[in-house]
Amino acid sequence: MLNKARKEDTMKKMIFTAALVLASTAAMAQKSNFQVKGELKNFSSDTILVYKGRGVKMDTILVKKDKFTYNTNVEKPVNYTFITPKTYRGEERKAFALVCVPNEKAELKGDANARYDVTGTKFYQQYHEVDLMLEAAQKAPDAKDTYNDKVIDFVKQHPDYEASATLVSAVDGLENIEKVVGLLSDPVKNGRMKGYYQPFVEYAKKQAEAEAKAAKVQASGVEAPDFTLNDINGKPFSLSSLRGKYVVIDFWGSWCIWCIKGMPKMKEYYEKYKGKFEILGVDCNDTEAKWKAAVEKHQLPWIHVYNPKGSDVLDKYAVQGFPTKIVIGPDGKIVKTIVGEDPAFYTLLDEVLGK
Image (cartoon, rainbow, N blue to C red; front, side):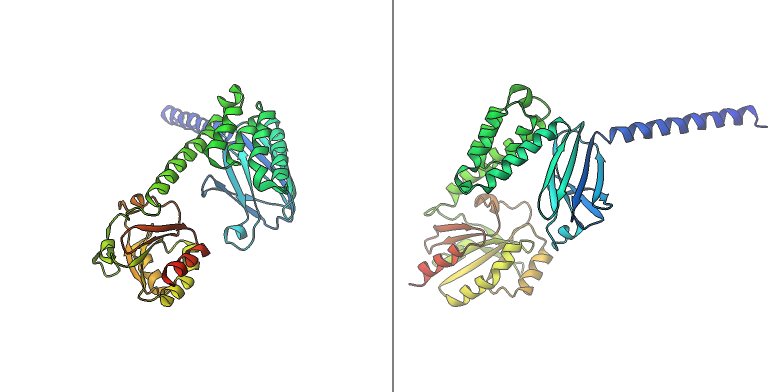
């Protein structure tokens, strides 16, 4: 027989355990305010990887006979991306994106190799209409000229649809995003979808400001800002030391696929116009070790400097993407700025250096 002290101790443990069970049950309930069920033929995977926003891995879903169910908790409407492991590894392209909304249920049915439809509770019934409209707008023969207008017309016709607020991610530029938001009814605009569309508006504003700055500081005829960074031997190197030559500042990184893809052509042109110009490679968002390894691996024969965290060089030149190539004349002024791996860069070199 248990003595009184042991009885009390046992009772306390039972109460504590019961409290834990209740807390755990409450937590489980809290974690399931959104559900998506799917039945996708030819998905050809027994698992699905779930990512939130820009590459934040959230979960792994089990798939049985092309069917799956996913329950989670979302504080506000948010974009989730669902992909196969092979897609993650770059071996195939099977994925779908979904706006996950609190206290709603979505259902996906279709063929992963063809098309699928989204339906479910009220929000996803609206979302299905949005999806069909986008599909038609994208497939239209004149889509290049009419796509944004068709999206905006849909919002005009359906200002009370919460799903209309998701179209901020479907249009280009701040002006069109603000048009979409402006057309929403007040209950939608000020309701739960505000947490979804507002980040898009804020990002578009910052992007517009950055593009305006880039247009100003990267424009032809503007004096190229001088800077000093350490070269591959750890010694300070200044852009101004190349004054009197044509110079290409190449903002790149070992992690940048398009930067690396363009290196063979860059090497070809460096040899073609040897002595007529210089390339100054500015490595960005890298570690020194990866930078040096990439220079060695790809045998890049031009001058290289390392741009560390805290440097203001990217800000000085308002670099928005990689690679960015800025051609500078012998007078130290910008001739032209080319973003991306673009054949126009080599056409420009032929025009300037092939005289």
